[in-house]
Image (cartoon, rainbow, N blue to C red; front, side, top):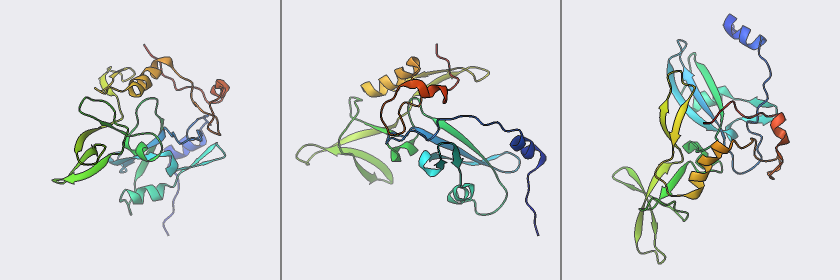
Amino acid sequence: MKKYGLDKKTLTQVSTAVNQYSSFGIENTTFKTDYIHLYVMDMNDNVLAEQYLSQDEVNIIDNSVVDINVGVHLRQMGFTEGDYKVKYYFLSSLAGLPSIANNVGEEGYIYLTEDQRKFYGKVTTKIVNNEEKYCYYNTDGTTEIPLKRVENKYVLMKVNSDRTEVKTDTQNIDNYTYIDTYRTLLRQKAYPRYNWNGSYKSYHYSDAYPSPKIKFD
């Protein structure tokens, strides 16, 4: 019978692990900006696949334990047998979101009119020549007006040699919210932003859930 256990390196990591407080998944609102970046690797640490997961795809128990079903995630990605390593990165978006967020409250995509302004109405999706196209209709429903879909992200301009500093910029999007969200990075807003019941709160929780170690110039 095959026996399973922990190798020496993993055993050391587990036995010396220290509890770290995190605000991941505790904001009880429709605007869920926490997500996971999952990497699947072979036993030589070569990356085989990666995937974004929303915070709803893991269970948060008593606001203190993250319960992960690794087997389900692997099978969903097509890995049904073999030996693999997995690495989960637990992330909180400060500005912009990956496309997975489109399903969990905030927008992963922004739809733009011809003048680069954000469109707020009903978007119609069509398949033309095996490619998704987006549009909306005028008030009487007779004229189809094209839209451009862009990811709700910001542009990475430069990364320094030791990868500790980055320069970023906005896309060409004429929308106050999109630009102002970017400005909030400079304001260094406290996080988590909301109380457990979704109401805006005072920031005393920042003592228990300290801000990420990020500095701004």
